[in-house]
Image (cartoon, rainbow, N blue to C red):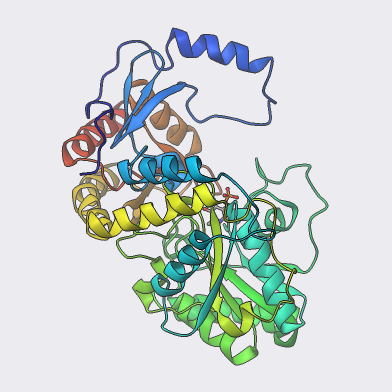
Length: 441
Ligand SMILES: *Cc1c(COP(=O)(O)O)cnc(C)c1O
C-alpha cells in the first residue's frame, strides 16, 4: 500500500483561483519575512500531500508532476517513511555521527554500496544536500589524485554553493553576481543530440580534445557528469558519450563522478541512470529521491578512493542524521516492495506517446527516461527556444491544478517528475490539461 489513511483523495479539484485567497494572504505575509531571493514555482501554499496529489490551503487538489523536484518518489508522507521517522524521533534525534555513531548510518552506506552500479568494493559517506555531496565527491577526487582540475559540461547543474555554482552552467538565476567562483573548473561541450547532431563518439571526441589541449589529462582530478541532465533540460546524451568519457578518465587516471542526484532511486526505470549504459562510475553522488523528503545525500564509490582521505577529513554536523537515515532505509524498502523501477517505466509508457503527439503537432523534442520526461518547446517550424510560450503553458497548467516545472538553459523545457506512486488516471488527466494548455498557449 502506497498511501496512508490520512492521504488526500487522489483527484484533481480546483475550487478557487490557483493560488487562491488563503495562499495570497500567506504570500503577502511571506514578503515581509522571507528573503526575496528564495522563489517558489507556484505560490499555492501546501497543507497536505500524498500519492500524486498536493492539497493547498484553499482546498485545491493539484496533480503533482514535480515531486518537490524528484524527491518524493515514494510519495509524500509515505507510510513506511512516516513510521520510521516517528520511531526514530522518539528514540534520539541527533548525536552527530562524528561524535557518537549509530547503526542506521552504516545500514544506509551498506545499502548504497550494494545498490549503486558495479560489484567492486565500495564505501559511502553521508551529507545533507546534493551540493554538499558534489563538493565532497570533488574533495575526495582531488585528494586521491593529487590533481586540481575538474571537468564539467555545458547545461550542467550541480548546486548553489560556491564550488557547485562554478560547476553549474546557467547564469540566471543560479550564478548572477555571486562570483568569483571556485577555480580549476573547466567547462566543455556536452552531447545534445537535438541541437548538435553528433553521435556519442563524436561529441566525446570533441570534449576530450578540448580537455587534452586546454587542461591537460595529467591535471584532471575528475570529470563530473549527469547521466541525464536535470535542470539543464533532461538532455539525454547520445549513446556512447558517457562511456567514452569514462574510458578516457580511466586511461588518464581521472575520477569519473556520476551526479545521480536527480536521476537516482528508480526515477529513470532503473536504480540509477548509469545502468542504461552499463556505466560503473568511480564515484556517484545521490540525494533527492533517497529519503522520501528528508534531507540526506551521499557519495558512494571505489573503496580505494573513498578511503584515501585521512580520518576526520570528511563529515559535517548533520550529515547522515539518524531520522534521515531511518527515512532512507524505509524509502528504499518501499521502492523494492512497490517495484518503483517498473512504476517509472509504466509512467513513461503512459506519458511518452501523448508528449510525442504534442511534439509532432507543435515541434520541439520529447526526451528523458522513465518518470523523468520533458518536452523542449520551440518556435513552430524552427528549433529556436521559446521560453515565453513555455512559461505560459506552465502557468496554464498551474491555473488548472497541475504542478509542472520548467528547465533548460534557455528556460524552454517543460519537465515532468511525478511521484512514482501516482495513479494512471491522474497522469492521464494531467496530460489532458497539458494538451489544453498547449492548444491555448
Ligand atoms: C538538485 C541537484 C543538485 C543539488 O542538490 P541540492 O540538494 O539542491 O543541493 C546537484 N546535482 C543535480 C544533478 C541536481 O539535480
